[in-house]
Length: 268
Image (cartoon, rainbow, N blue to C red; front, side, top):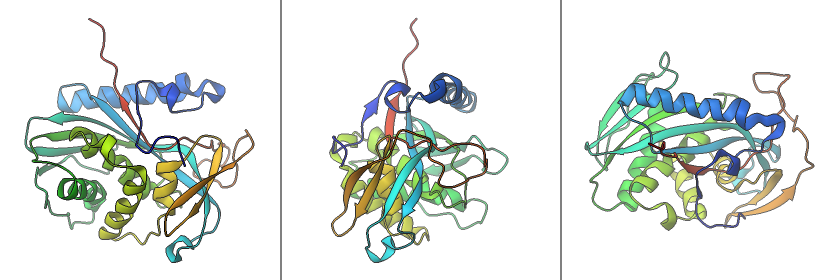
């Protein structure tokens, strides 16, 4: 498995993305700047952190993780990024970069906050499930809310685990705000995220969450269950073209795992 038992906190995108074809400067940095700009437009202040989790492709073992059999997935560059900042308001505010499809939502800071039932708002239940779980099992007294802005380039309903990317990146927010990020191991995260994804109606077996949490650049992972074990399988340094997503000519890059990025403060 990866070197650290806990999710890392970085201050540079160079720790997170491979810079193939100068993609950090051309693709990733402009995206993060736009997310930060939008966050300030929505909330009137800069975000403090970004959480990020990748989608995945599966190389061997489709749909057998449900029964506890081993699988061989790899994370991809396409990911879910959530900008966030703690708030003194006893509330959770959720905004999405895709404002046409996902409206701005606000919830009370309640360990038993209710899932939404309307079809157009059910997407936020992944986020609420992550919050509820951390708040009920791990968090001390809830004295801080948070403001979030979600951006995803993982295609929905395309077999590359957009739901797991959402659940994993959402989990990092309460862990960070409540000072629990270095007290909650990757293995614990995987087991609990599978549980609460099922609570929102996802029939999942654990592969998607495990690779999002344990992935390393340039490798696939042989994932075994009962107990969870992720063994590194080296992949040649080349574009991974196993599947087409929404742009058939675009290569896939084998990616790093989940992380939390602390936004650098501007020098006065």
